[in-house]
Amino acid sequence: MTNIAISGACGKMGRVIADICASRSDVKVIAGVDLFGEKYSDFPVVKSFSELPAKPDVIIDFSNPSALEPMLEYCKGQSVPVVIATTGYSAEQTAAIREAASVIPVFFTFNLSLGINLLASLAKKAVSVLGDAFDIEIIEKHHNQKIDAPSGTAIMLANAINEQADDKYELVYDRHSVRAKRKPSEIGMHAVRGGTIVGEHEIIFAGRDEVISLKHEAHSKSVFAAGSVNAAVYLSGKPAGLYDMSDMLAET
Image (cartoon, rainbow, N blue to C red; front, side, top):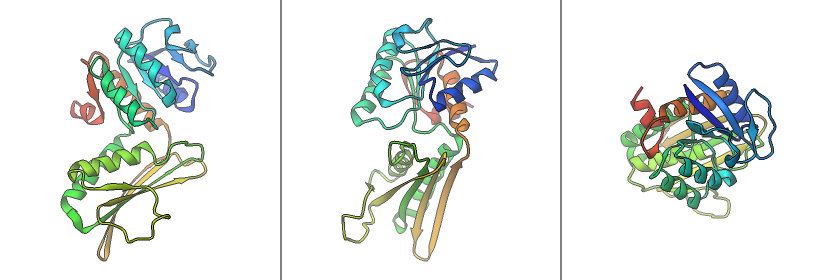
């Protein structure tokens, strides 16, 4: 049994995680942390990590970048592994996450969907086959309440492509202020916000007289929540280090 505390317990994702955990026999939510939340299930919800009634085996974080510092302080001080699924972190915050991984197990990814991680692998393969002959554009679509743009997942996909291509691409977020032809070294990044779109990511490889598109659509937030619970079970008992979906999938 893996005992879990949910950071951001009263948010949309926190509630989905609680619901998924309630349907499983191998995990149990023992507490939630949410500054503005209220109790809605059989576990207590506290406002700070120092108020947690018991030490969890793992913390799952779907909250806000502002909650990162106190969460990492608690996890490092109590030797608690953490699954970080929040997006929108600054470079300094990302560095703090990587530093924490030298002390505790940290599962850090921009997207916990199996399909998205397959999409990243397919994009790498496409780059190795297509080479420099195709322009690359990434389009992501999300609901109108999402704050960060482009999405962390879109950045993850671009980074996967750049990893395969020895970091030769420049991410270009806005072209309206520059009147110039597209450079071959660009990856265009485009964000669409509207309605209740859960998440869509498309990678376009545009060549001479042909276009190849790789696309993933998430129709429910449960795909991300289920992935975070699986990651929590995987992370429990692991040594200090930085883990992601590729590590978990390698052991399945």
